[in-house]
Length: 141
Image (cartoon, rainbow, N blue to C red):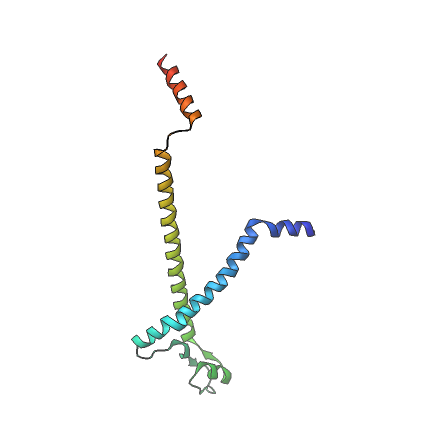
């Protein structure tokens, strides 16, 4: 069983998945920082000091706090500001991934076009050229 487990772990797909999860986690932190530290302050300036993170509706009469953290300590709250922040995070992350995939696809298409052009311009290998000449001579007979 241990050998089977080693074989399973050593497969490329499992290692690729592990690398993807680790990089995805780090990328999530970067996007979260981008949204919290760069995008949300700009949105706040545009909308006059707007801060989504402290927008909530108290679900209990005991909740009297003005900040979300303090309100959660007092009782149940409907924290729609956090939801808005998560949606903005998702949209930004989706946009960044779209741009990355688009860039990779453009680069890939460009490389394939170059390879095709080089292949068309390059003379055939000597054995292919010899076989082509033989074929052409046989056709004329």
